[in-house]
Image 1 (cartoon, rainbow, N blue to C red):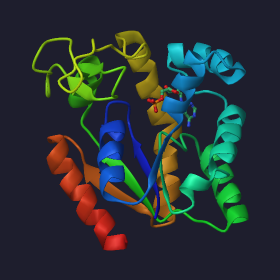
Image 2: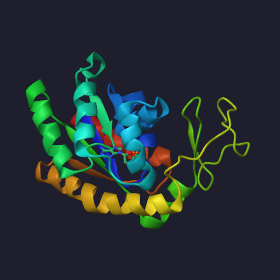
Image 3: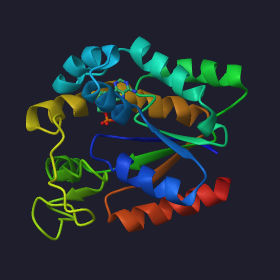
Image 4: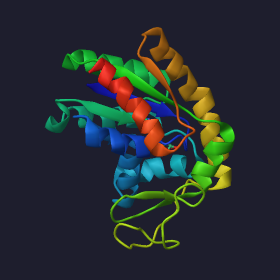
Length: 216
Ligand code: AMP
């Protein structure tokens, strides 16, 4: 299966992606994670992307396309992928269609996570991440047992640099302006499965699981 997961910042794309790859035979590809790694590694792409990410702006399509072409040529995603945070513009969706056509592949389903605005803000403001094992927490909904520390490995948790109030506002504007039309693009292709993602992560995942079992 080749899948996309779409949703506003804070909708739970990362959390659901982790749960999906544990159950289905797909490789998780998050452009946000790849860009954050590039910033950490201080690569050319990382240096270019940092200014955009810090402001909550989208990184230019040409940069994202290069990353995706590179990633799609790796062997590990032959059996299926789950793109998270990509495509974020209609231009990216059109490029992806071209790239996949060249590879003889297609998208089988688009999971659209729908969350109300008040929950989105709390999900972002409360998000705490483990730098070591990648576990994610939320101080409002799923707090760690010991404040500021990972339940799994004990490391000190951190807050994503772009999870501050000012940047979040811009990320939500970017989503509405650029990514909402991407959902409409895939709706025309009858690929979109709307999932209400306001509830607890296990309830949301159960809905996704049933949906994906139906198309497998
Ligand atoms: P995410 O982890 O998906 O929330 O992405 C974090 C940030 O990385 C976004 O706010 C954008 O600045 C950038 N980014 C991630 N994916 C894309 C993409 N497909 N196109 C443009 N910018 C992206």
